[in-house]
Length: 439
Image 1 (cartoon, rainbow, N blue to C red):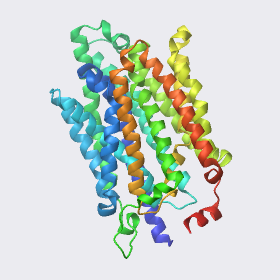
Image 2: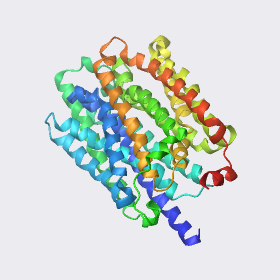
Image 3: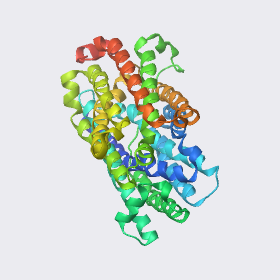
Image 4: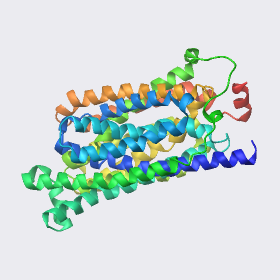
């Protein structure tokens, strides 16, 4: 590769990373302020967040299939545009059917960046720096999530204090027990969260700007051949291709039971104030930043597969700490915060491998389609998880706590599958082996 092309590759990688950073801010709001907002205005939508996550995966997977025809740039530009329209609609149009539609649009916009990330960065990185670039993209994105989550709840409290004409500390105490709020206070709390959502219209617009400067060539996303080719379904004869779908689906199902509901569980079930809840949730994103920064070193020491599976197993005890937060009494906030921190850190440390490794199973032409299938598999399980929580799990006493036990078991089983199947071939595959696999 000549220096000019290498320069273009680096530029395109950084453009995406910058935009992805702003989208990290949007993700933080989607999983924190948006969920809490919906909990007050449309409980059905709020309790089915995992379902909307799953449907958004389907939509994004379908959009990714258009990459060989349209390229990455045109596809990813749709994300911020959808988010801007949805945030304005959900804030100003008080009609029941708007809430699920706008929620879906927001999650499609956010998820689209995650779906496009693996094939896009694989196209614009070399073998040597791929893990480093993936790690950089992800920890910068998570920094955005951390900031949005930390300040999202705090800004909500500040806006509530301003609307009620009380101090921030008084407003924070009010949010520790939403059921005790008067109808007027609850109404102002909803409007305070709406204020935060509207602020993030600007963030969505900022994520759009860098994408306009992507320097794309057709060869980046399409491999010219002398014959018309369709998706090669024979790739599923490869056990690594097929079992990865099962592994990813299991991980997504487990995550869908707990991740969208962190704020609801901490605020409503454990009785932790709104601002403190946001701070605790932001600690887990801060953990992701730290662990993603050291990810290349960890992967080098442990290998791709052992890092991914082994660290997932290490995360499970901390889920049980979160689930049983009340038993720690006055130390509950510290215990739950530590649980969130280490669960998130261990579970996400090897995430760059989760994104980059499956792209090595297939050819350049097949990468967008295969990545679409991966997210479809995750989408199916997210929808199932959403219906499971809405119709059963969250209706039984202690349902939010039980979700952590279920997720812990699923993570352990998924990790065992991963380590058993992939360690021998993919844990430490050197350059010679990669060249052999390509040949």
